[in-house]
Image (cartoon, rainbow, N blue to C red; front, side, top):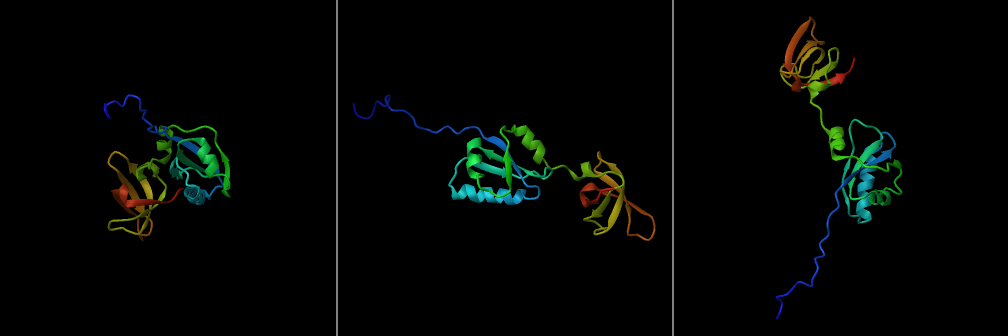
Amino acid sequence: MEGGNESGSTSTRKVRALPKYVVLRTTAGQEVNVALMLEASSQALKSKGIYSIVVPPEIKGYIIIETEGLHIVHRVARDIKHVKGKAMGSLRPEEVERLIRVKPPIEELKPGDIVEIISGPFKGLKASVISVDAQKNLVTLNILEASFKMEATIPADNVRLYKRR
């Protein structure tokens, strides 16, 4: 019997561990630099197991690393300058998604805010928000650079927050 019986052989497939999201504390304002240094360190050490590095826009002083295990993060982040500490736990994927989800501009606008109009006939002008209609995705603005009181209702996608009041 040649080659027909393979019952004695075992499969040596590697099972990939579920990724974990580990939080790394950094110096505030240095998050992007630390992320770039982590990437370079990971490549220099030929470290497998780091899948992504996330710099949450709303949180200063922290980055999130998607990895197979905490030991990989400890090894890669060992001698990086602005790393202040490592969290011992891990985040759930839902928490990470909540942190990095981009909010629509209309959720950020409130009456009294100063916005810049980025498209349309009033492009480049500054305006003050009078009201926000989230249902219709419209904002009513008072154009500040006009010589008289001028109100305009435009789509919320056409404005960018300039300054909070």
